[in-house]
Image (cartoon, rainbow, N blue to C red; front, side):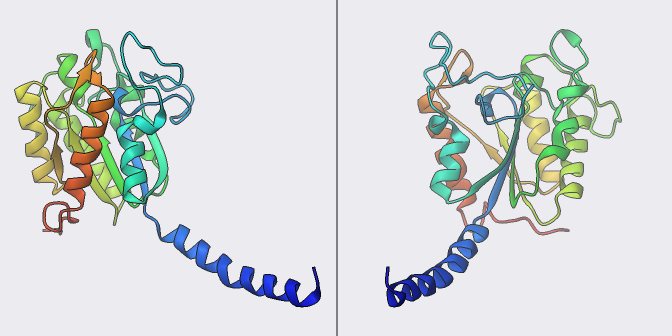
Length: 235
């Protein structure tokens, strides 16, 4: 390469590199705090229980690629970047789990501080609390082994720990009525938009490929709405 070509190439690199860095840094970072619905082998912290494996368990799911997960589709189509996926199969929002066991170590409250520095946070939970028969409890109670107090604690802590972050709660369909009602009430009280999912196709109780696509589309539609999906103002 002669000196003129070298100089031209150098100038082009000096111009484009800052622009590329600026474009990269301007993309919003997404973190997920979830349960089995948001897991995928290799994309969640080591030690967290997994439902969706890289080697597909065809008896339970037709999801065979990370690109089929709801969150990968949302991030790709929305032009976002993945910050952290802190999902744990079987995890409850409350400290109570299946068979009445203590799930404090994997609860959403305990894992909340592990989400990095997101611009957008999706909390997708409540399913295992519903399935495990966790009592709803009283909202003003301090009993974190019941659902409403634990969810209130989670949402308060989320807003305290992640100021200026857009927080959304994803609410599964087909849950117990009392869990669904308590979730909507708590999200309204804390001014956190609740995306109420509907008509999610599932296999073995978990989103199929079609279900994952539907979740991604419903979430993208919600957050792109200039009125519904906007960042709620503080009272």
